Length: 264
Image 1 (cartoon, rainbow, N blue to C red):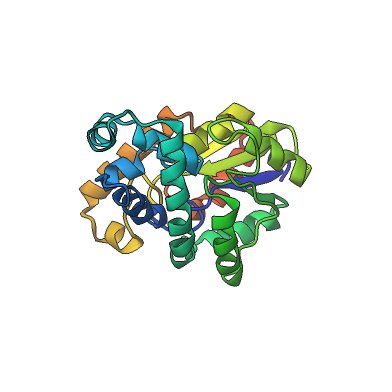
Image 2 (cartoon, one colour):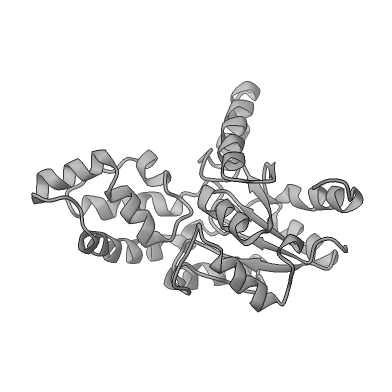
């Protein structure tokens, strides 16, 4: 394959944890420790951001911020974000490995991409301490990317491009147009866009749909199509060049793009 040199994958909702469930309960429990009710929808909305930024985004939404002011007598400040984040991280560390099952077809897709000559990189909104729990579980299933960039490895995380720049250095791949960034969230897609990479969103396995493979399979065809359309719109609006159902579909897409030089 001449056009593409590397594929850089997100983790939860993209390569592992179909439906992106691991952080949800941890966010709810962390906010509950402070007497704050946070819904699953509120926890999912900033998904893909570095986790400190995710907590900040939740804490400053009008409904949650109002609860905080009522309980503590002031608007949430950075120190409050620090406090919730400090509680959240060990909670997420404790459960992340339990949800680290590979998305169906992910290993076969990566093996196929390696066979095409691509290097395999990864970035994540998870901290390094959380990923230390996830990496061995993924490796035991046969997935070990060539690098890993975590949210706390660099001065700035998603939606900025630094994580992708680090991948370019780690993998020794360039130009950006030769790299495919694959993600299920808006900040993760924006990360690839900011770095100038081709971006591919995954709709059905990700945060926007938020269902298990079994739940997706059980959906009536019309509802499944509607959920896919809604998830795809989120990803396209974030700047995705293409949207596929799951990473299992990526090799076919890249072969098609390689075969047709006129496709942007």
